[in-house]
Length: 392
Image 1 (cartoon, rainbow, N blue to C red):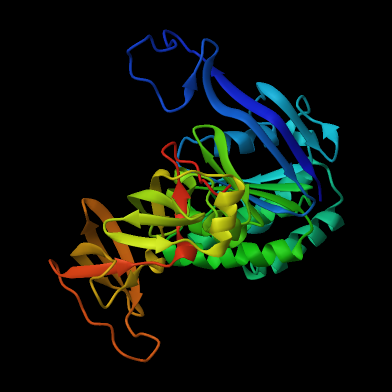
Image 2 (cartoon, one colour):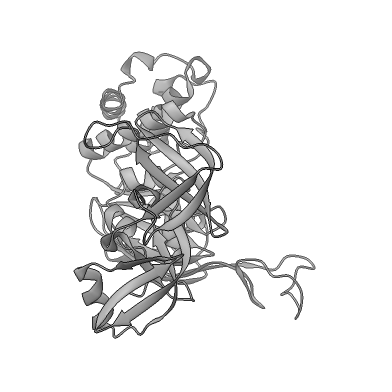
């Protein structure tokens, strides 16, 4: 159990060999390149409460694993301060931080049994044999791998090996448990099972979790709060519901949610003190909550990017005041249909149930058919030309 504070944490990888800061006109990387080197993590600020489950999520190369490794002490912190339980630990050795880490690869010793693999970090600490036995068997029971204790890793499935790797970490009873994409090597079914196992594990052990993933489903289902990163910067911090309902910018809007949010070129209208959005011949008044948010910030009428999630699109029965789209692909998903369509040159995804609320089967559409789409004012996300959410 522990609290953590990351204050202005920065990581710069120095230039190596002939690598230098790009000259004017040369192609740049997405990360900031300075005279000192490549800035992988930039001014990372985060307070983590005791027993909180924090998920760092973002595309490859965004700095999430680097941040985790700095917390673990496996990467030197270039700038900023890291506190664990109020103690500054920038220069504290990894072994003295009371942190355990589960890696993407299982990293199990092939010549050792499951019991020996889990006991190994405790033997290194010269712990009493009876205490080692108690901890290993307790962790094995928690993870439901007691009957595998005498087996070698080669006799286990991928999910079982990952349980052993997690067990080896929790026997140490660490203050903080770090997980770096631990499920990425598993197939889809096993990932679903292991996500559920991690949720159960979190309820059984008293520790603080920091979990890294590029999979938004893992982030949404596991985290108390999600930290969304891009190019070394934090884009948004919030609960899964907050980042889904109120994305701070276009990057978050596109990254969180599957399929990703539909984006339209649109106009934000302001008439008689009331806001509406208009795109492709469809004009919709915004909800009262959104009216208040925009009015409080005195947002003027302007060109915007309008975001509407696929499941919030509505198939209209008439052409009046609707957005026209042409079906390109229709995917039957059992309980719902995903229509991939083209609306004024924009790719649009529309999700509709196969049976409506009245029990009527939704009419099937084929390639080339026309859809007439609309949406309600409470599901609109309004972004300015710079990509910022105008409500917040």
